[in-house]
Image (cartoon, rainbow, N blue to C red; front, side, top):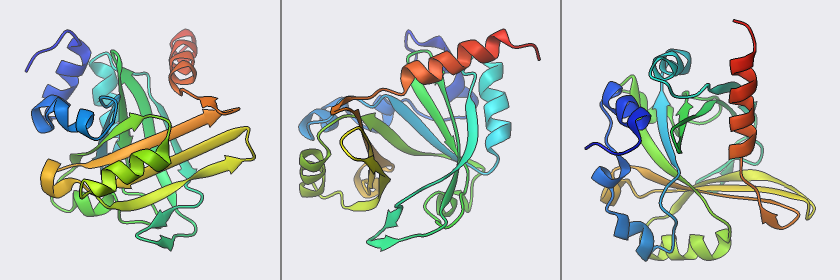
Length: 202
């Protein structure tokens, strides 16, 4: 499949991964009341190596960090000291996320038993988590992970994974980010980081 997003096409070809539309029909998202996914999330044994390959194709630059995952609740159990290795960048208008095996959770590592990297989930940035979660679970996709932070009414990060693997072969992740009760997008920050990194000498 080829699209107008040549960088994304090249990246998916490099990693032998499908476009979202090839894995999940668009009407699935519509029926769930969801936007079309903005993010391709790839679990990887070696995030750094994947970032280099992606940037060589014109994606990124990627913000590559290891961060704590506060309030990580997995199948109803709070997992303390959970840390995630994450690299975020863009291939054209689509966000790419590489995720390492992590610490304190097997959520990504269990998908890497027989592979160096896999198409793990699609990420959807959308407000209204409570209602969306009800729709998704009523469709037969149970919540398996939730996490995030809440700082009064000023800042709220709420993310949840739903297990849609049996039907769709990947997880769904909803990310409901708000600032002062307004939708918060990470894109300006990540695009700004990319421009700044491009300006700095190697």
